[in-house]
Image 1: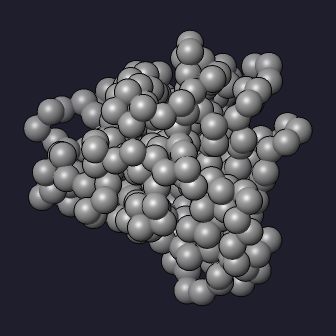
Image 2: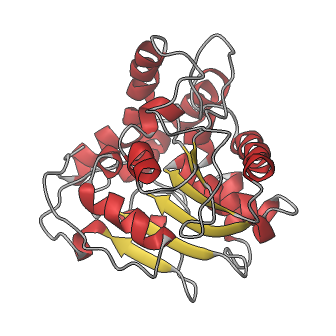
Amino acid sequence: MTSSVRATVGKALAVASTALMLAVAAAVPAGATPSSGLNDWTCRPSPAHPYPVVLLHGAVLNAQLNWLYYGPQLAAAGYCVFAPTHGGRLPVVPLGGVDFVEKSAREAASYMDRVLEATQAEKVDLVGYSLGGFESVFIPKFIPGKAERIRHVVSLGGPIHGTDYGGLLKLEEALLLRAPADYLHENFGCAPCVQLEEGGDPVDQLLTGRITRPGIDYTMIASQHDEFVTPPDRAFIPEPGVKNIFVQHYCPSDISGHAGLLYNAAVGALIQRALDPGHKRRIPCGLSLPA
């Protein structure tokens, strides 16, 4: 994909996806879950998988749309799996990931507390996609009392260092459109899409000082073809002990883009390997989505 096409696709994808996901999500009840086995508040973690998994969705999404593939996989593997829709603005719209990052992260952290209380577990595992990946790293660093209650963090395409949306930010600035575009997003569309730009306040806060917290195992998964988090290695944390993995390390011909990270057999296996490092499962390579 050329840089000009990437620039067109990048931040513009957030604008288009807002309308699309509103239409799709409107047909799905807010409390719905991807499959049986998720959000089972009677579930008790087993000795094999002692930590319940909390799945945090991306911007302009919700739990049922984001976790259709990996949620049931984890439940079938014996994990207690919970997937909230968080960061919404309008109760009548079953869509999350549109409110400001700090508010959304605190909402997700409160949900994490509910899971800990219900399951009687000592810690949880956080798996987040895109915005949810950023939040899974943001929560243990900035929300008091949460770092010691988290065992694993797995991020899929999280814009840890912000994103330049394929160079589109520079184009917006050259055309004097960045300020009005950001204003519209923050107030009427996708606030995190603005906050997670390079230089956004939550990004600068996260990058000040050490990102990771002691006692947490971090795995950052990304695709070299991500058109939304650019450059793609901005999804990584260059700190000791962090596992930074491009899908292409295992599957060189994989063409997954940002959305493709959600429906990828290799990524699913990498998630389960991260949550259970003692089980070195095979990483399968197969069909992947170019988007």
